[in-house]
Image (cartoon, rainbow, N blue to C red; front, side, top):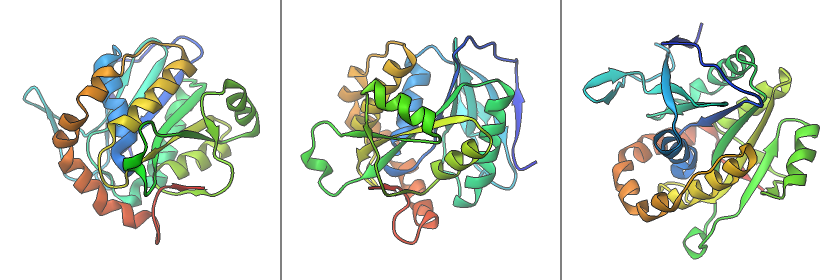
Length: 246
């Protein structure tokens, strides 16, 4: 197998259940969002994902213990897959297959991905706009009725979240992507806060993102290295830019 997982226990999830994906790409919007959610949302780590072929030779050290940089966490009804390091573009399709199959294994109702769409005037925008892209018509209609985001009408999405949409559609698993206006190569906690606010309302939990906004500069400094790693992989996804474009 391209990816394998080692779980310390089997998570018990109530319904409806969700799986949130946080992978490094534009503005690290998804990565910052899921890291914050893990820390503040009562999520417990229960598994590590391994791949000799697709995960770089990096270990994430926590409290003196070396662990895989790709791990899973859960709370009452949600699993988070979070990457603590950039993953090569070659991992996108195998990882998408692993994610969707894993979601099916646990009967996940909806996979939620979080990404950024780089815009040139990001500095001039106080609150970024969020859009959604769905894997199927039924979910598209549902999201339209929530009024939480705008529809991403026409364009394309490329990068690590595109194969997840494709694989989810192919295997009849609901998946939507929260796409937030962001910087391309500067960590964007403000965009992550917008995504978290939307997801909390969609799933139905409370999360205070005020600390995320207050600590924006500190977060940017802390994960500058991850942004540099991610920038090296971004051109591999597309000949133009690897994100979402209307």
